[in-house]
Image (tube, rainbow, N blue to C red; front, side, top):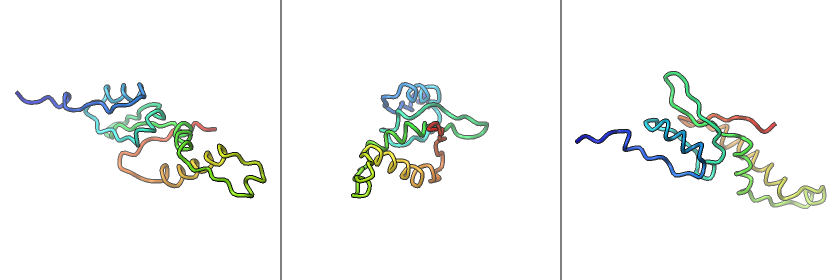
Length: 117
């Protein structure tokens, strides 16, 4: 008996219920996603005629997750001006996101929702 294509695709395990639901609704799509730790930043899906389904990520949530991984080491001037480690990590995360993530073109790249106003 031929194997059904829909049964071959398994949802990617995630703690994000929305992402799991998206993968269930679009089982035959080759949805590209970033690393697993950013699953919580998924806020929706983008569909367009004759184009692949793409995930929509919250920039605010993505940067918050990224900031947790940043070094946040303060120099003497930052300490003297009252900059906190949390502020430094957030600034580093924004810079890293701008130059290395949102600025990179990858086939099937995600949609970035700039909700950090």
